[in-house]
Image 1 (cartoon, rainbow, N blue to C red):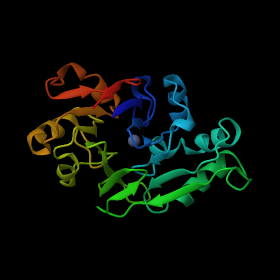
Image 2: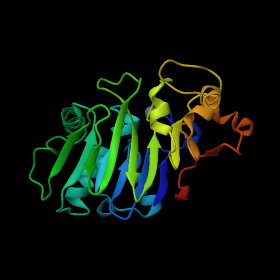
Image 3: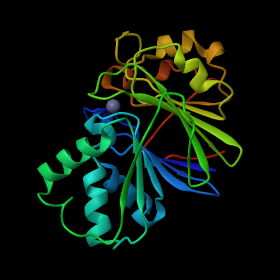
Length: 247
Ligand SMILES: [Zn+2]
């Protein structure tokens, strides 16, 4: 299994990093985890086409995590001329939020005829969902975004990749991270504890209980980026746009 960091930035463009999106290539399926507004740009940089994507898994309904979907739609219609379905999995209400977004950006884009089906699937708390030979289990976290936000735990090729999405600290993260081959955690702040985001000090205080085999820090805000030299690199990898990890 291979994971490419398409974007590891926050919502504010900190460090000039692209918004959140990861690309996972497994034997049975190739998928995006989150699709921030800049995702199609990041895919182009890495030579990933929409034809290389079977499914998009969205953690929560904030623009820097799902705002890139309208550009996938217009790529599918006008550039890659997609014919097979594109499955988008996300929180309850994702289809209505997507339609409102896409119609605001490109009027009639969701109404006009297209040659492929856009299929929306909604998560249910801790209910494993099988799509295209991989299994994802959603865990509700804490990050108000107009719909339940989730951390996601993926099982593919006998490997486990887990991602916090955006969240303040919640104990559910122990279940998300446990024994994961790769646990990707947002790390918006260094030592400032916020109710809806994680910080390095809180993550590190829970390092042993998280019990992941490898941890990748992502979604770093300005307050975290200026403290990067304090990160214990024997415990954590620091994400960069374009980084590729083999599991
Ligand atoms: Zn975010």
